[in-house]
Image: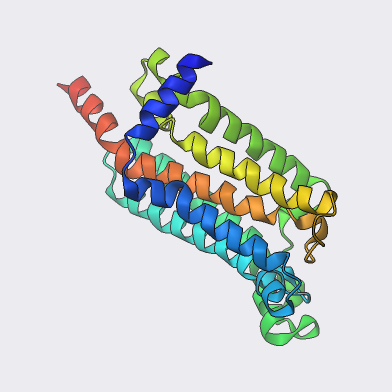
Amino acid sequence: MKSMLKILFSDIRKMSKKEHTYYWIIPTLLLSVLMVFYFSKIPALVEFVCPKENWEWGILENIQLGIIAFMIILSVYAFLNKKVALQKLGFGFVAFFAVFVFLEEIDYGAHFAQLIGGEEEIILKEYIPHNIHNLGNNAKLFKRSVYLIMLLIFVIAPFLKTRIENPYIQYLIPKPRIVIVAMLAIAADLVPRLIVALEILEDGGLGVNIGEFSEIMVYHIFLIYLIQLIFENQLQIDIKVKSAKI
């Protein structure tokens, strides 16, 4: 445990002001403001975060869509610019999967169709597929799977890098500083739930979907990971591959 903390704090000390800003300062400020709005009981502010007619139209959901869209752009950029075949394949898959998640989040266009034309005027409504992650018990299964992946990649793996020799696996291991974002993701899930459960403040309307606050951080941590893989770990793997060829 002490060695893990030593590795973590050593890596955090290497972070620039810019990295501190986009790793945790901006997300913390953003989530704090959104929660203040959500629990404010001021109708306009609550509606901004969670519209009564459909909370999917609120800023909370659209921030998530913005993060996913940015991930799609970065993945396509990496696919086009990376030279190593396995990297190109990997980033191509990430781009494809991010598009799938984006479509799932907007219910394949149904949310925007309803916003424009109303529930009864959705164009070709019967042809719009329903999102997979809300069918049956899929939502819980998906979330549990994602949390397990996050635990392995963002909490455990960063402290095992020195024990691994394979350059490709080393490349995939994020820097220990990403643990900060993982802790924020946990806080973003627990804080609003506890506020409602302990009846500190009245729920603003999300109800069982109050975990949407944490989804922002879930997407954010994968965005940070993607940035590391594209712009920070890139030279390490390229150098090793070139050395192997020589």
